[in-house]
Image (cartoon, rainbow, N blue to C red; front, side, top):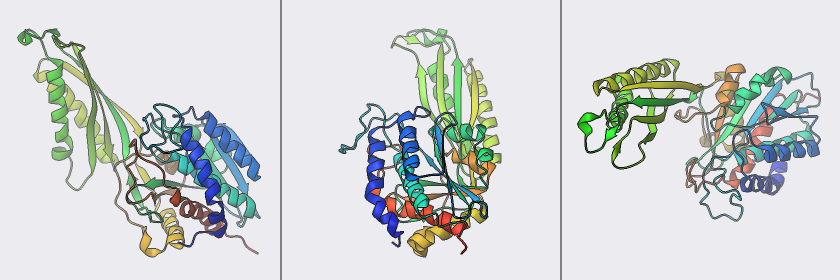
Length: 391
């Protein structure tokens, strides 16, 4: 794999940063230690401008090339936050904080972009400006939107923006992307059911919210199977069911939570409408009342065609034609990098975390340090190829 030589020499150091981040996971916007370490390292690299506190705890670094005004302003984004999961890897650098772990590889994303920043600040072999974005709260907190609302794009003059996410199951050194919808919208569903509570030995005198909730869960599975065109993609999953506190009482209320996913605006609208109708109508059949609160969170992540082809071309330069999927199948996971792609042209690319990697959000997951040379080389070549130095 033809990685950049200087990057190969930095790999051990970048891996050490990554393992330090892994051992000290932080959630959502509370990434104070991580953001502090990021800012300190950017300062030590000689990055021209380091700005903390964007979107509460985000950090932005600005690196000028040989002729800053002659080229474009290209941004690269990494996420910093971990997940509320108890780690089960047994690694020597496993999480030192109970109930928190880097189960999605954001420790690796942050370390790789730091490595790219160090290289770019040393070499400056480009004309233009490279902006490195370290974002909090990707895991459900919409940190990308918070940074945008804080003026990210305008304050730093960003013209294009790129993201990278590791992918378990894809070989190390391989990349995958596609133009158009790559990742699904990610919305949350909250369902409140009101029945008539009473003694469990007298169900006929009650309106059983457990029964109503069970019927709603079953009926909601018909939305995708019977309301969507079979050629479209959608997901409706109920993941929480809370009702009652003891064995001899039929509860007065029940509460369900879940998620809905789509790859198009039309399917997203359909899911919202059908969920609301099914919840209300099913409850009415049983003599209960229910309401669905459908909250739109992350939009569909849509890669821009020209920028996607450019990113794929850079990946081919790093890994070879046969190890780059330029029209990969979309996935139904969500990503708040979608907010950035709504504001500026760009693309997200997946980088292989290994065929035998545990899945994302699994307690046995670990970012594969063997990915670091390819990932950092991708970032530095993206900047050098998009803003080539002249003379």
